[in-house]
Image (cartoon, rainbow, N blue to C red; front, top):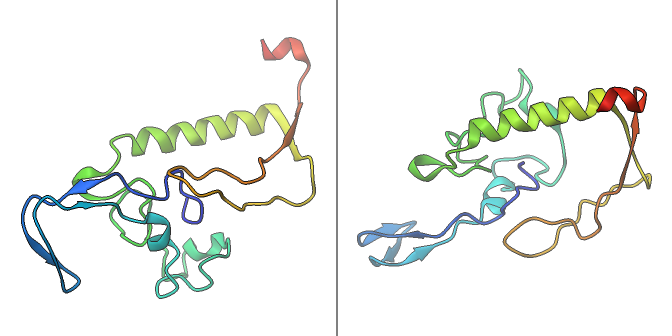
Length: 145
């Protein structure tokens, strides 16, 4: 979710009053889109930001307390604050349930030995080359009905 968020840009926000952000005057009515992908791959926060390293969130890491629920602004795939996604808990629970069900029922393998995670530009994060997987049932077909 850090390297490949479903939506690399946040939803549009509109300033309700004049304010100053980072030394810049922002007039009331200005619309803002936040580049979540850029925030989550900032080299000032993440060492080797483009590398997939699950151990970053281990018990001895400086990011051990970082969670995806919008309280840590270096990792906000569901947004943050009052405008965070209301379905965070449901989405995470369903992801675990679906993944566990698939892994229990099927033997999963990839078609090619290399997985290309290159994305395409756009409002959603699609793969340039789709991931092709093979699913082999672990149990006889009559048990999957």
